[in-house]
Length: 127
Image (tube, rainbow, N blue to C red; front, side):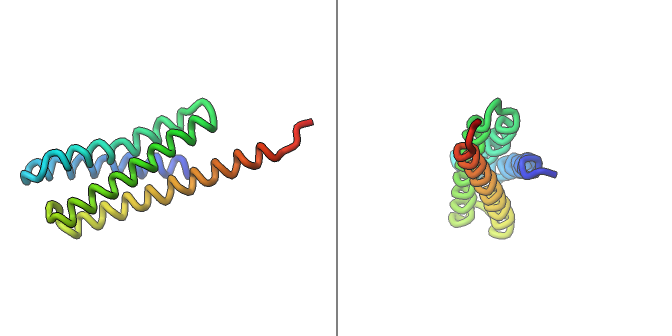
């Protein structure tokens, strides 16, 4: 399975967990605004990865992966905030935080690889 397929699968599974967490937060009467921010950023990761895989160019692919990376960072923030304000059980929060960190690492690696490939193409002589 390629890195893009792996991140596609993992970001979708992560989005499912975020949706379930959103429902739990609302059920437990936690701050709605924070839950909605988390829902938007946490599901946006996978949506942008999905768009990236359908990109028409390497630049389009990298742009969508970059957005997905930023959304993973934002999601990581909201999860930490929910944990640290005692809106979310620490054990559950840690599992989700690790998932966000894993997606950040994967997306960063994809972006670095894409950037290195672009640099190699620029350096290649054209005859």
